Length: 227
Ligand SMILES: C[S@@+](CC[C@H](N)C(=O)[O-])C[C@H]1O[C@@H](n2cnc3c(N)ncnc32)[C@H](O)[C@@H]1O
Image (cartoon, rainbow, N blue to C red):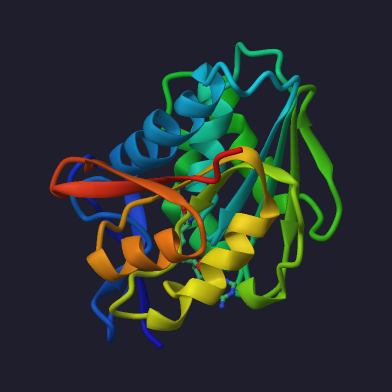
């Protein structure tokens, strides 16, 4: 399948699957989407949630892909001394050439954060690696349907390809796996706001909020596991 690196409207790059007319991120801005959907409406919400009296934050990313969401998480938490454990599940890691061409070592004003881009891609898979004293990354190369964690995560970044491309990932059984993998009061965020997706989440017990979407998108979803 032909893959191309393209530049999105905010100047940040993403990968395009040419034949499917699908991108790893929003064409309106890859960085902007990550910072809004996953950081502002996900991570910031978990950090501020007073029910979440946690001394650490455990994050599962559905589709590690380019590592952009790991980078924005590192940038957001750089001055925070809460340990972050970040698990990125990915069946098809991007190539070394794509890592270079994406150029995410130039995304932020903070050179110390930019420096970490090479570390998150060069570190080993299948084991936790300390990227900073407070941020541990574990990249797991496997299919989403092999996830069997129970009661582990405070937050899920659900960043699979859209329902048009992978309808099999936006259904009840997958959201049940996500629900079970979250701790009480855990939160899942995703850029999709499709009615069938919201109903699939609700049918497995999630309390679902529709939120305003990132630029270029009307709405997104945040799903709470509740206690
Ligand atoms: C929308 S892209 C991910 C974007 C990623 N979060 C990022 O910031 O680059 C979806 C990702 O899911 C991966 N993927 C697709 N189907 C998968 C599956 N069944 N199991 C595991 N990974 C899968 C793709 O290879 C791709 O990296």
